[in-house]
Image (cartoon, rainbow, N blue to C red; front, side, top):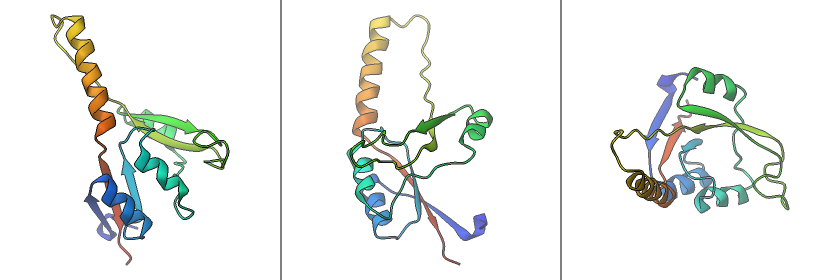
Length: 132
């Protein structure tokens, strides 16, 4: 598969979830919280699984904005054993930079608002692989 055979599109979480379930897209990359209900409901779909990246650690060493993350068997749902095996994946790293003279209380309030907005808004990047 080459880049010429790949079509990258950006769509919202609900649209991406439905497109994946109906097989209109093949893969999507999510920058969502691990507690996001839209992501968690995808584990109920028998034909959808979390992709394990063979070289997740290599990517995290090569790109300082990515962190290698292991999700162990049963970590998402112990009762249903989801995932059924260890998954090696990636997480993005976020940085906050502020002037030195900003009061600590203001930084604390700002971080609280950022955390709230990250949980509230989910951005999904969707990759559609063309059938050629």
